[in-house]
Image (cartoon, rainbow over all chains, first blue to last red; front, side, top):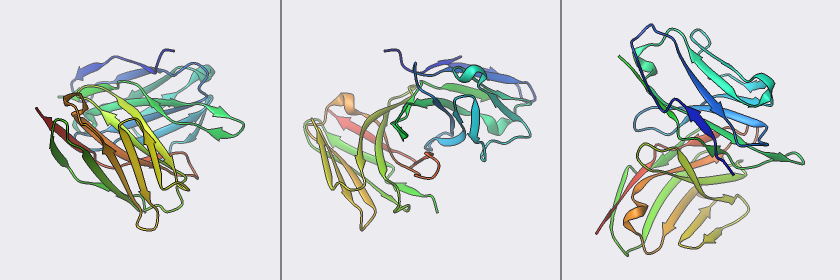
Length: 116
Length: 111
């Protein structure tokens, strides 16, 4: 079974430029998460989707960050414009649900963003 | 509040046991996890434990949970050089399914 797929793996951009990250979750997983991991820290949740609905985006900086999950499968996270402080690893995770019980989150390899 | 504390670094000799400790604040969490992260890679789920359990063993891994003290530990028996990585403790908030992570413990296994 394929795991969570993310692209690109690495991205270097200048500040004020836009950037987008793509995630394809594990097949059959209805829940999709975007986390940000700063250097030397654990991941922090940005947004959680149940199918195509964003059910928790309370920690997404909405002035510059946006996300979508059309058709409830793939997801895209966008930053426009990027700032120096956005340099981090952006991780996508997915989990399945069975009879109301949500199971473990599986993570992709991440996209390492460097803003110069 | 949401908080997970881990020591930053652990160094052990190959073949010895490693014990990585974690304390957390949310006593209502049902699930607690250990993830492993190798350089340049995503997080790999190692194991998890339900909050109504005291111990879980999975091959070389033993997880101990002291719910009263909100203390979680991961013991790796016969530690190998391939176990060198960063280990993250995390708990899942029951209300939102959000994972709250510690800052990670870097394990270095010396030959």
